[in-house]
Length: 363
Image 1 (cartoon, one colour):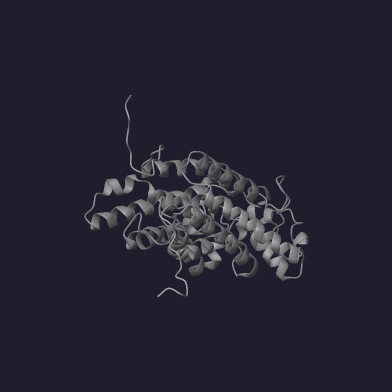
Image 2 (cartoon, rainbow, N blue to C red; image 1 turned 90 degrees about the horizontal axis):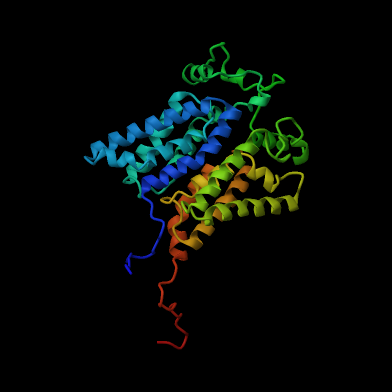
């Protein structure tokens, strides 16, 4: 009988960084397809722009550091960062903003700290926050779902709008954001936040055609299916042990608990757990963003705390803050707390007893 020795923690499923990153990309496919179905070809164009920019930026910086370019690019980490940023952006965002965001994620947030494994913040979310604060109007320019849109966009139209600001028929982004009724449409989170500020109740805010697509009446048209698609991909990652369950489960549970608590206070003002789960980037964030192995907590207990805190901040910022979706802000905030969380949640070394506090009679 042949015995094989390996060092702790005796991980039987060994995967290299590039294999892990490829599985993350594969798991994103259902969500990306859903986004393309509901929001058009702009999603793919933004992904291409972001990926090309990220790879070129990574290659240039690695070359300047006189390191091997092929090895740095072959781990797919730059591409994963770029695509996570791209799917978070409005599909028709001007090309130079996408390029700027992707460059910022790689050059500033990742490489300035020393490259993969050394960055304090999640690169994609830090870049998203930078773009949102710098260009709030452009970053809120989401199209209505295809089923509610007044104008249908071809691939050529999407390319034209991203690079020139006008479709091939001469429509600008404001006109393209009009729904079937001719009025400019907001995202579900934007719409509900605006309606509540005008004195409508939460239930009244869910009555327009923007909501109720067969999944749940709390899900915005298209957004519910996108959330389910990313949920499916995330479950696959957990099943394959690419990520652990701690952060996604604690994050989603925290969103639910915080939302339910607020609804118990006033159900006319605060959204349900289903509303928060099925709109915006909660599912994408829970499985693909917050689970970043570099910027997230590294201990089992720490991951639970990290995920729960992100879920809490998501609901609080959505409800009381100035931005409708808060995943990026919540992740960046908690990235800063990771060293403290890990410090207090480190598991005790096997065989070592906890140190007793000295009594008052001790010298």
